[in-house]
Image (tube, rainbow, N blue to C red):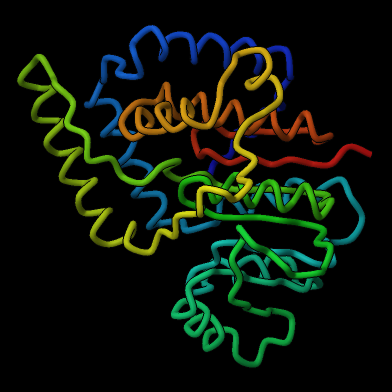
Length: 284
């Protein structure tokens, strides 16, 4: 069983942490001193667990969210489902639930339909979360490593559907960066070259499937606190996102902002920073 460390998030503390971390990034002109060795170690560890465990940590987090409730969710929506393996694992974990997998790419949905053939509880649909038209109100909205602003849009969809639980495992916020940072030491340069090689591999094999939204789509990227108290806007958030490619500071700003969005919208939020898993339960 994957080790989870879901910690309840308190709004005052998250506000302080978001303001403090954003201030550090601003003072560094969004180019903080990178510790490529630590970042690379964390990246490789995360990649290993991703290949070894798949979406099991997310499933255990979902189960934990229903531990104190009677019954199981009736309808579960799994966005960015890809070829459907993770969605089918969710269906196995919740045998009395009806599960829908959504992805914008038809080639993935074709593969998923083949995997789910003969399972009447699992449905795969081609759908664009940026223009989501599906009418059902889901009890649970989830995602596993939704790239870029897709995670924010899935969160927005869950809020709009009044889902009782929104859960997800974050991936990169932004597309893989082409920027070349300057390092001072030989060790940093070696780590940087390895990091850039991994980024190039990810871009060739994964980012080609990334669907960027149109500029006029409401992506609901910012918490009210970030907008009104910290004067953060979408353009600055994209600069933060580019820093997040190889800096944990950028990742923290993005994650804290997402946590605050959910708290502001009436959810109680638990977060596992190590696994980058968020579980939000709608308050009664």
